[in-house]
Image (cartoon, rainbow, N blue to C red):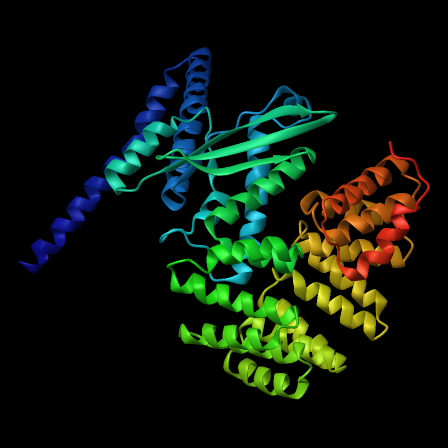
Length: 469
């Protein structure tokens, strides 16, 4: 019996082998009977079929996979003719907006584990969304995904329109989400396409997570008024995680304003939410640092780093304390450790550059800023610091490119605006300098208060004899 059972599989394998080996013989017998012209026609037909069918199959698979991973689909936003002529087609404009959203998503991830709307990391999903292709029937694919995988596809659509106000052309961007037709972005800008897309991305973040947006306004854009406005919204959130981080930001902002007792009280409120304690210790150490209680701040933050050695923010605050104490070598080590843990923290490159410059290492300071910009090319803080670094080196033509980009991204920042006017004047760019000066005059006329440390520089700009144009 054993011998018979062994023989049966062998017989089956022999039959399978004979069938497999018969295929090439069968094909060969057919090919050998065909003429060269018949073979050429067959090959040509095969290529045509494959060229039509294969891209559709590949495209279907790619779009299906993208929608399963990221259930957001955006229809290319409609754009006016002037945008088309400037190279911003509907697809190009949509991709530019998505790039700006991705940039803000990177910054937000540096501030908190994720940006939540319900249980969905929506900002990240929009940042990596797929632009609907005209070659793919996306609606059919959406139906399939809903039917077989039970997932809803979020669809985004919008348009850019133009209007005139005096001599200025104002661009208006709207982006809507369906189902529901909720407006996600509704902004205007006079800064052209680049400024519109930057402002639109920030407008989206304000709606999705006001706490993260407040942090970016305070840390990155250096706009405390916008930060306070959004922080008030975040503090009313029903989400305890949002409130915890909102109180932590409030503590940091109060400490920066010299309101130490209130900052310490807010820090203790952070601790009351439970969970990891490093945010509360970070804000408490920063408050002690702001009160110039360096030894107390250092002792607390060393314990914080010991408990959370792989948390970038603990190392960052430790570096700030070391710098304030004049212990530059230790500050540099802490900042470099922060960079290793989170290369998206734009502030650490600026702090490292300041510390290196304090030691006399100007080349190292410049290198730190360039490294930061290679990783975060749209950081207005880094662009500003790099422009100022170039001014120190008298490389004004390169400096103006950096400060102009910073002004597009963050046109409301006083330090950027003042630096822009000064550099444009220094290069003899009278129309550009006059434009920046007019913005300064307009803001002062509206009772806006610039930082006190910029007052003398602003007075010098306003006395400049260059004519407005």
